[in-house]
Amino acid sequence: VESMSGDFKPSQYKDDFREKLSRAIRQRLKKKGATISRKLAPEAQAVASSDKVVDFMALLQKSIASNRRTPARKTAKRRSAKAPAKGTAKARARRAGKRA
Image (cartoon, rainbow, N blue to C red; front, side, top):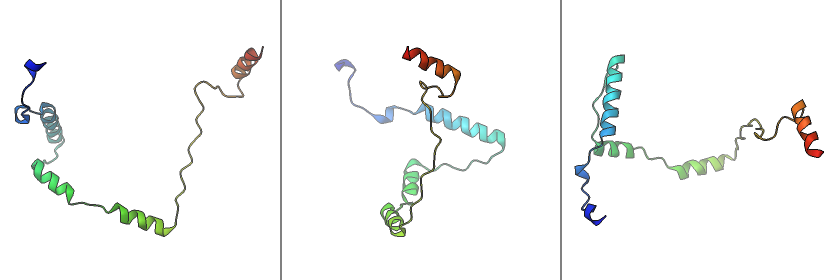
């Protein structure tokens, strides 16, 4: 293991998957006639995405202050895979067999 260890230099490695994916997406967009805009540098993307800050505390306080609750949606009850429907002939036969 020591013979394979050394200093890690990220600049030596390349993200081939991301490049291939980007190339495939660009080709597909060109085939469909879409226009492709210039891509921002990773540093610029980080700055652009950090400009949209949401104050969750203020939103939560506003929600609590409104004193209005939204009810949860009702979901259909699931039957377990083991338990067959109660009214079927198979189910009655199985129950009868277990009792005997």
